[in-house]
Amino acid sequence: TQGGYLLGQPVFTPDGDAVVYTAWDAGSGGSMPKRLGSTYCQQRFGKIHVSSVKLLMQELSSSAKGETKYGGKDEGYECLTQNDVLARSPRFFYSGGNDSASKLVFLSNPRGFDTHVGCMELQLMDWNDVKEEGEERGGDSNDSAFTEMVGANLKTRRTLIHEVRQPKISGSEEDEGSTNENVASISFPGLFLMQLPTSCFIENGKYIVLTTQWGSVSKVITVSTEDGSVSPVNANLVSGESDDNRKENASQGLVCLTDDNEGLILSQVEPNKPAVLGYVTVKDLLESGNSCSAQLLASLSPIAASSHSDVFTEEEKNGDDENMSYEVLTMNPPHGNANIPVQCILLLPSEKKRIGDGKMPLIVVPHGGPHSCTSTAYVPSYRYLCQQGGYAILHVNYRGSSGFGQDGIEALPGSCGTLDVKDVVYATETILKSHSSILNADRVGICGGSHGGYLSGHCTGQYPDLFKVSAMRNPVTNIATMVTATDIMDWCYIETFGIGQYDWTKFRGPTKEELAGMWEASPIAHVENVRAPTLVALGMSDKRVPPSQGLEFYHTLRSKGVKTKLLVYEKDDHAIDIVQSEADHWMNIKLWFDEHL
Image (tube, rainbow, N blue to C red; front, side, top):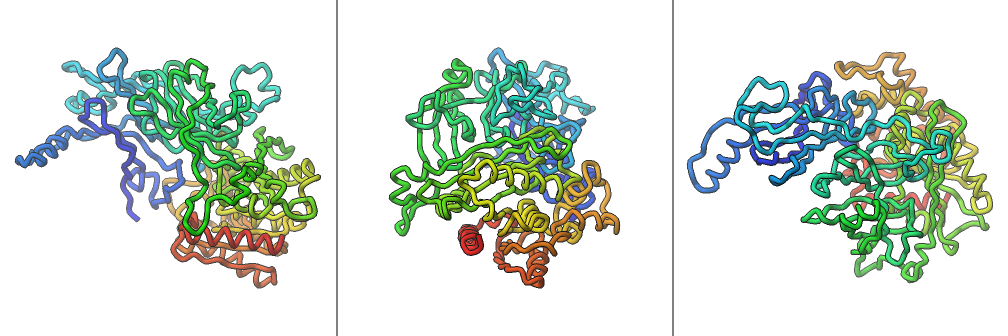
């Protein structure tokens, strides 16, 4: 487990003599004595470096020509983000020798954050293409030969997009008189994305285009490199629909730029509509103020067809599938201290598919993380439960979800098992009341994985009269028994006790007081109240949430005489996404709800 640095995301500098890349601390930086998991973990300490590869490229060129290897040594490396705790995803705009200078843009959070996801800043600095004799550039390196090689002009670094603590909610007092454009009922919440697009500059470097989470919607935005102003892209990708009828809550993403950087290929999805691809010219986009029509390129199928099974039934071919509807609802719960909304996505099957005595059963789906977000995307598994099963589906983006500002993220740590549970219950009860004519309040189930499984266990234990059936996959059930077995023990401390409650410089086992606090924050603390039939699915190769978590809950329920079933997938890890496993898993979930809900 002795670590060093993990290197990735390399890009060549404009002159091709150096590589800029991200270096994540994996044990040698003094902040990770035990190497922790990095997948889905955006808070792992990382900095952007530049290394010379001039001699290496010469050597490779000589070798390719059959010449004697040079055998030289490159000049070294330099850190470009010395004072940033988190920095990643370097991208270049190459000026090509024209009047505008080349630019380096990257994501950062100078102070860092403890949670696995957080709000990022967008940084930009000029990069000198032509090196004047004797000119020094770069950071603190004392090697003048090296600093002359580096084209970075650190003094020009500036923040284009700052961290956003709390977005404004449409219709609130704070939003009154605002001229900013809202998406999903909130103003711009800051940047929430893993990395920048490989090619992201348009209009000769005047704008950056990228995809970010904006509330419950994935949104393409443009960012001015002059003043950092943000504008959402509102492109109509649905054939036959006018601009006035554009579906504002559809999720869109940047697929790529065209080779000449004069066009954008965009995707659009909705919970009831698989992806469509469209083409927008940069000229039309900018002239229309980011609101224009797109040329439809393709409408993709939801799954692959085979000779055995068509993609669509005859009814779906005739448009019945699109009668499956959805709503994005914004709520402001009275509990909790953070003025952050709870957003939900309600999926309703077409009338022909609805089951029950005129009122449908409801399956509540809290997402995992907990610092992630369910967007208005097309997810075949939930479409399957909704349209084929006839169930209403309620996705809940409780406080702590990404895409709602940094305050939204930080509202949850230290309150897991209480605030998130209350948010899910509040959303469920609110929807049951507002849609009482079509939803059956006596037939409510819950389904979730990872932290969603954690919330499923909490909800059936704390609110056994509300949630009648549960399906959990790789659930966190007892943080006290998970903390020394998981690859993210920091999660156990921070989500249980709050921000700043994990010492990154040390490794030790938990104290007896900490173990007690972790147990109290866990579903196992309420397991004696569980009456709901519970399906538990486990990927036995999961290092994130060890299978022992689900097994502990499963055997406890069996000993109580609660109806339960265990699904074991030996080769799957946390996601349970091997094709055969995923298919078997979701078919079993539907059968479980069919039997018990």
